[in-house]
Amino acid sequence: MIRKIFKKNASKKSKFSFFLEKYNLPAAYLAVNRKMITKGVYVGLFWGFIPMPMQMLAIISLTPLLRFNVPISLFVVWLSNPFTMPFMYYFEYLTGNFLLGRENIGDIELSLRWFSEHFDAILMPLYLGAAFYSVVVSGIIYFVLNRLWIVSVRRERAQKEQERKASNNATSIINQTTLS
Image 1 (cartoon, rainbow, N blue to C red):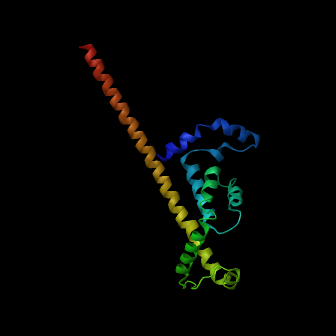
Image 2: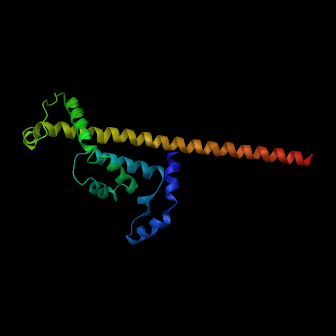
Image 3: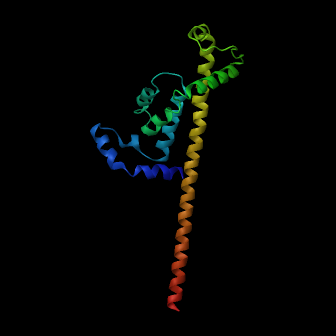
């Protein structure tokens, strides 16, 4: 099913061929196959979990080194948007404190003065939690998506094989009745 969704939208390659030729980009950056999609999701999630400005530029800078589907990666990095960032960063901070064995800061105030006073206590747990989610959670999602794609392809092939056998059986029955 996952594969069918991407393949359905990949049939519009003629619209992108002009774009690729104009900017002399490899077609692999828009390829719709298991490796390109899963790597694109991984790279997008990896950078999406890291609290930093210009995450999309980090993705673009990795594009020549790791070939992946760039639009998918750019879409996935936007899962960390201004609405989800506070929740993501808070959970990364909590995870970092848990991994460091520290207590969480109590009495949180949403003021610049409070934040500047507690910046040192927040920074290390936040980035440790971000590293955990970037590596571990993105890796798990990469392997799960990869496995789902493989299972989807196997099911599709098995279904086509069953349809082919059913069609062959129906054809042989029709041939036997016409011969008799």
